[in-house]
Length: 227
Length: 246
Figure 1 (cartoon, rainbow over the protein chains, first blue to last red):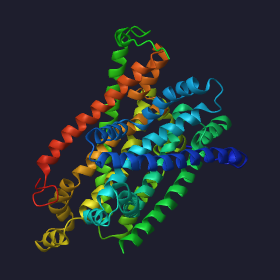
Figure 2 (tube, rainbow over the protein chains, first blue to last red):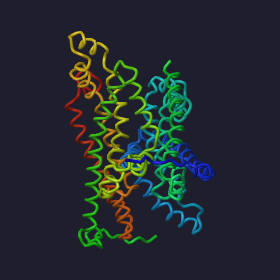
Figure 3 (cartoon, each protein chain N blue to C red):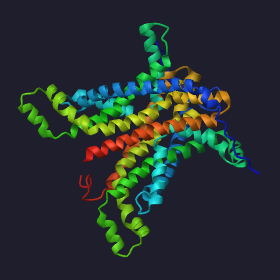
Figure 4 (cartoon, rainbow over the protein chains, first blue to last red):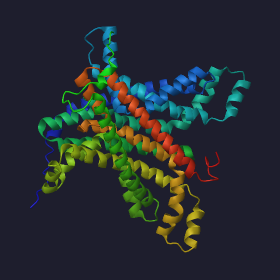
């Protein structure tokens, strides 16, 4: 006779404060990567479509390099480089070297993905808008800032949000450098209490709830824009 | 910062003495490629099946397809992998679970990673298949049905051949993604490329050489896949469609 697994969820309530702390780390990495990624990604996108050949080439190399290497490798690379750089600048005693490495890795990695979305967004703005802005006497920088970018960001908002959802899921990969984000904490608690099955299923459910709700919001946004 | 570069490290023997460190890297490369290709087969077949299900005029089947896609797209790949590897063997009836746990560890890791990557990517493929089918002019299906084909025949002979040719570019990017995502298997101990990178660091204390070599290998995979898929794309182009006349 085959016996089925007996669930025991009792170790989750006591672990909630710890899991909450982990969730904060997850959000910290996600939000930093979104903000830095969009700013740096916009600059990369502008560099890539600029008239300057070397600038365009440098931006394209950056973007293609980051996009062809697995995120796991990128995280490991930054965990190799960032601690050494920090040590040479600040000396010993950086509070959390794993977190610092993860923040840098995700911010610079996401910028490559965001810059492709932003580039497509900029190119989707009709050319006549640029001509009209020049005719009104705006400079190139003013045209970008006041005419092109506001329209481009409006068009690409759903894509930017979808990328943010993917990013939120991807932050769980900081597991490879042992940073205790939400997933890392869930794994550690499960391992400690011998309740890995329950904790992993619980973690999956929480991620699902966040990502599913966010993707429903994106869908609603898309529908509103389509009208 | 003084770092002693030593590229000849790749030619020296590993402690076990059965291979060079370069040999380790190639073993890793083999696992990465084997894992990605076998997962891709699962992804293509499952993705096509569910993509078709979501377009047929039957609410139950469509709901089944949507549920699959939403679950597999909204849970992180790492969590899915751990659920396949650590959770599922416990939840299976005991004999089956025990049979799995008695397999060679390498085979356990490979099977879990293959199924996980396959179904994860399958959800994305099914989205592409669905949008490919939906992008066909309505008349194609109606004409096929008017000619007396049954619905399965209309899919088999008219709609799917067109849809697959249209979605080759997005499928290419999913194909590239599967190679990159296969690196996640390092977390359960499968000795694919990125695991070998970490192992080389532990054994040789030459992190930069190891990481550079592995990164270059991933770049090579990327370039090879893009080159092959571009040829497929050129051959499969549908005349008259966007990109068809280029």
